Length: 174
Ligand SMILES: NC(=O)NC1=NC(=O)NC1=O
Image 1 (cartoon, rainbow, N blue to C red):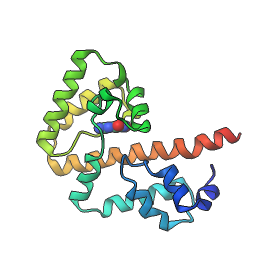
Image 2 (cartoon, rainbow, N blue to C red):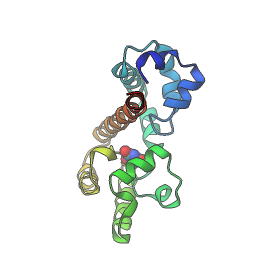
Image 3 (cartoon, protein in one colour):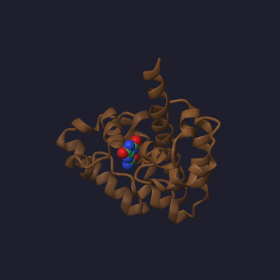
Image 4 (cartoon, rainbow, N blue to C red):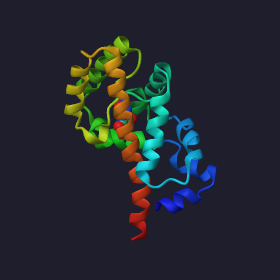
């Protein structure tokens, strides 16, 4: 789907397609729709980033809280969104050993205990080993630094989701 096709979408179709580029936060694409016509993928990303950056700390932490844990309850119960299921599978979280599952569960709860929001990382850009190492390392950050780091990861997840939505369609067109 090229950017002209994106710009021609009705609001409903735009939200249907782009509603989950930030996990379970349709308000963000709903808000940036007003900025069309977009000049390209980078323009959509920039408007999403500006919207997120404009939020107070509580809003940024709210976005983080909309993310499912990696290898968490939602994964175990099959309650993940399609995007998240695919990302967690790609990083190797769908076939963990029981010991790895409990390790992730205790690290995730230690992190949540410390920061008040879940550990978020772009799973597609990391292996499960990288992620466990990052989780341990980031536990040492202060809250403000960790909030900023996690929001940076949300933006990476969004960028990859946008690309797969827009480019995959054009790939079909080739
Ligand atoms: N807590 C998380 O980092 N969750 C996730 N990261 C991804 O890339 N997909 C997820 O579901």
